[in-house]
Amino acid sequence: MNKPAERAVTVSSKGQVVIPADVRKRLGLTQGSVLRFILDDDGVRLLPAAGDIRRLKGRLPKPAKPVTLGEMSQAVAERRARVGGA
Image (cartoon, rainbow, N blue to C red; front, side):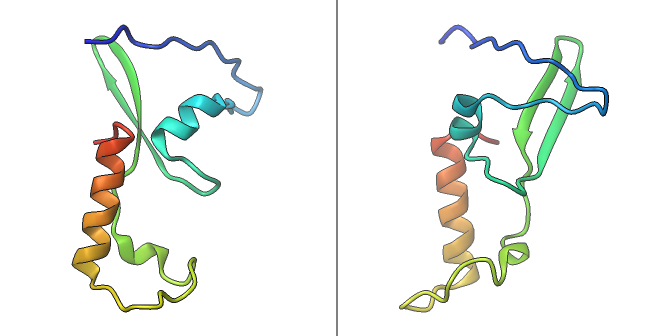
């Protein structure tokens, strides 16, 4: 098992933090991404929120070949598995 990466960030007066670029890339986060904070006895884990693919409707151009909702969901799940999400 790899040693966990550690990053220090500062919390602003509004409770905001900047997520380091390498962390955003690994989690596949972009502007508007929704995150989950998992609190447990060991601390906190930050994960991309799993969601319904239909919430993305209208954000991308229409594909050249139609795809099913199942195919889209599978592609999202495969991407999430590659970037270490749950």
